[in-house]
Amino acid sequence: MTDASISSSGTQTSSLVIAKAKELHAYLEQSGIKPTAQSANQLRKVIDQAPTPASLVTGVRIVAEAVRDYHVVRQQEETKRAEIASQTAVRLQELDLSRELLAQYLDRSFDERRDNFVRLFDALDRAQAEGDQTSMSAALDGILALAKSSPFLSLAEARRRMAQGDYEVEL
Image 1 (tube, rainbow, N blue to C red):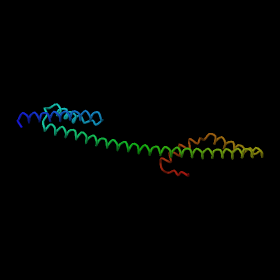
Image 2: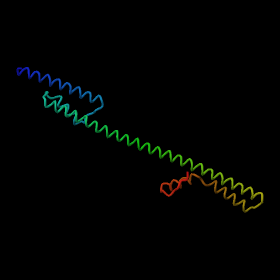
Image 3: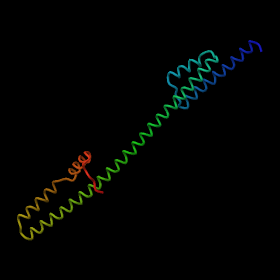
Image 4: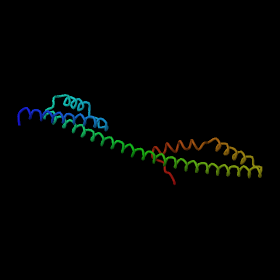
């Protein structure tokens, strides 16, 4: 083999390698594997150089590092998404429990208010039947006080106590 044929063969091989490197670079960009700006610049310099075995090795190293970096970042982002999904599930569960507690509290609170109103009106009816002005006044005062009170104010107090941790919930 002559020097000219060796040189020609080496140039063809290097040209083929550079073509493949360009093809790989385009594939990486199309597939979403974005090399860092530094590795992209390094790869562009290698591609633009006259082809040599050293530039081939450098190009392969740069591409391998970019792929490795991509997989590291991809794993980190998947971990972050999994953590976000986990936190979302916990928050949704907390919201469901809070909603359930609120519904139970309001049910019991309104049941208790209804029962208190029934007892107070029964007391008012008895006081009217007996003509007892003092009992009628006391029953009316109780009805007015109960009507002025709001279960939502009690709810605010309950939420404050729950936040402090000194509140016990009966289920």
